[in-house]
Image 1 (cartoon, rainbow, N blue to C red):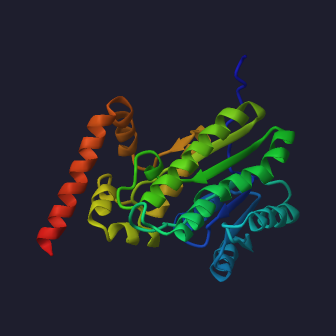
Image 2 (tube, helix red, strand yellow):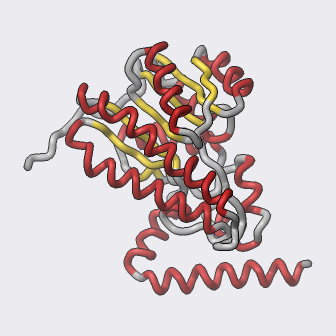
Length: 274
């Protein structure tokens, strides 16, 4: 079968929806997208007052969203479509950090993280794909993390759910690209947002996140615009992540040994300083 070539995606004159848009990476994405002259911007967030503030700044629409519920995701898509017509680019960016630790973390934390970090992406694609496939065009973008390609040593919940988010994006890209639907997955490492503070409080997590340098949400937004234009599945704002992926794939035992050493050394240094 001959692979179909499509014109590169541009954001000008597009209807763009961003969840988790009231702060952090989501807010930076919206501000960066506004410079590309979209037809419409929609800010979706649990914190409706903050969403309204950024929507007013960018002449967009604010919609309250509980990303842990399918009915709320569908209501967002319905409200955006009613106001602005078909959605061209949907960025499922809302996320939760889960909790520090491993299997001992409670089921309630696992359930919330699974719903927000994974199922919100599933629900959005479930609602949007029929219409996108029918018109032969659309772009689904999930925010995952470098933790979904490597691991987050301080948080099993975060690592597992972000791996699932990456896997979902890969599956969608294989299944729907020939129907005209583009798919990308945003996988940053350390980004200066409030969510970063929790991971940085744990020595091993801080060491891993700092390995590639900490960047600003605006740096992620620039990388996302470039990634959309190039239609890359994996958008990697930290260039070192690609190198770690290559090592993990080619020599997983060496990679695991290095990660164990990083964890061991970071926790030993923290213990010595305490």
